[in-house]
Each structure stands twice: as structure tokens, then as C-alpha cells.
Amino acid sequence: MANCNENHSSHTHGANCGHQGIVHQGHVDYLHDGHMHHMDGSKVEEHTLPVDANNPADCTTGHSCNAHDAAHKHGPDCGHQAVPHGDHVDYLVDGHLHHPHNGHCDNHGKVQLA
Image (cartoon, rainbow, N blue to C red):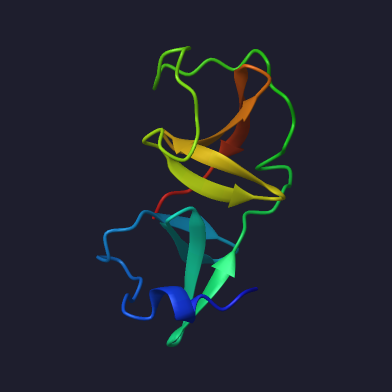
């Protein structure tokens, strides 16, 4: 886990910090500029959602999501929050993870929002 204090030393994540919280391994991490930050005292730790049974990294070509139209392309400026997942980045859409893949969105599972 990397220490992110050098980049975000003036901000303390918490319930009212303005960043979306995600429950992860028994605690809450906060999505911030494409990172998942966890406060450990005064130290900010960088976390990543693991690839597991709840959040697989499989291709799901049949996934349909009514939260955005089929022409929507996920990326850094798409309007959805980036979530580090395994060795890639997914995007948070209505409580689940979308991963752009070969012209479609893969469903990489639900997350519990805090």
C-alpha cells in the first residue's frame, strides 16, 4: 500500500468529506481522483478492490445497463468515478463496476456504498 500523504496532505477523508465511500475489507475507502484512499490515523493508504467472486474481472458481453446509453464510453472524463480493481480501472455506475472492453461494458460486480 502506497502512502498518499504527499499528494493529499490537506484533506482528511471521512463521512462528510465529499468523496464517495466504498466498503472494502471491513472498512470504508474513499474514491478520490481515480484512487481508493483509506485513512489510517493521519496516514492515507492507497487501496485497490481485489478481483474475487464478488468482483470478478470476467468479460460479460451481455451486460446491459440502463444508467447510460450504449454509446457511452468510460474513461477519465466520462462522469463516472474511477475505481482501482485488480490490475485495471473500473467505473462506478449505479452501485456496480463497469469495465470498458472491446466496445462494450463488462459488469465487474456490485460494491457496497458507504
